[in-house]
Length: 426
Image (cartoon, rainbow, N blue to C red; front, side, top):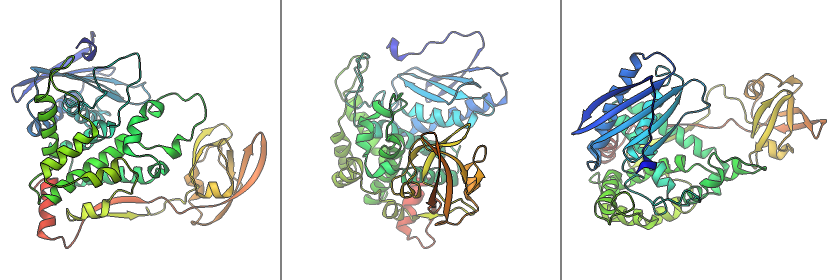
């Protein structure tokens, strides 16, 4: 247990405490700024998240749980790590400007109390810290946890319906913009995490075009599974029931383990539990969308809840070159090219440096700003430095990428409205 229990000794760490459902919760805040009013807002938000998640899941077997927050202005990005009875969260900035991120991260990490720390995939414990640990279930362990973070931010009243649907639509935009969605399954993304998930790469890779995030796709699979179960059972059951059943089956009803009771689950156990709870057969769903790379069934699944996914081009959006770039002194260096894009068709290559578009300098200007003046399909000459030599390469620009929104169907049936209201809350 010691390796799963973070310890911090600090002279300037404030500690707040509250009680919920008979349990004690401590909130430790370490910040380089003066304690401000947002600290109290953070504690109040945490109380709402805890109340919502504990109302859904079986009562956890601890007496106290600790949230440890580090607010620091000099970190490149935030992060969070779940532990058996605590979480350690790093947020860039102060409690004032990092409040929203802190609550969203805490909603994710606290749900790990059940999903991962007690409901554990095979291979995720007991650990051998001298070797990598491979599992095909991170889409469920992390992605579905991300989905429930969104769900409980809604249920706790910290998000509106509109914000919840907006965030889900943004997750759809993210996945649909990834070329790797056609190549890598949710299971493969989980299994290969050791190779690309914040791992340093000592050679060039094509990860930008060949991988997806198990957080992102797993979240969307959680949404679709939840709505599919609600639809197939007429609103009588949901993914909530599957999560509770799995905790009861594999944690509360299992054998003892190295530091906690319970036994691990395999991929097939998720399918079987879903089938048992819903009385439906989800084998095909998992074969297509978890093990496979079929396009996700947004339209039919959302329609069952009286919702539709709308794809639109944002007003004033710039046409797309189809390349990922990073800025350097001379202009924009290409780090990846989307297969089949204008950049690909026009002959641009990785490591090309774009110094101008139609003789307009890219030394300081953003690419989108330069391309806004052109319509999709326009032939734009780029000045390119390749292998130390300057060249001119003309590219036909692609249409701007879509943005997405999830909207209510204007003529939804009573059955569809019922599913929607049960999902979003009345």
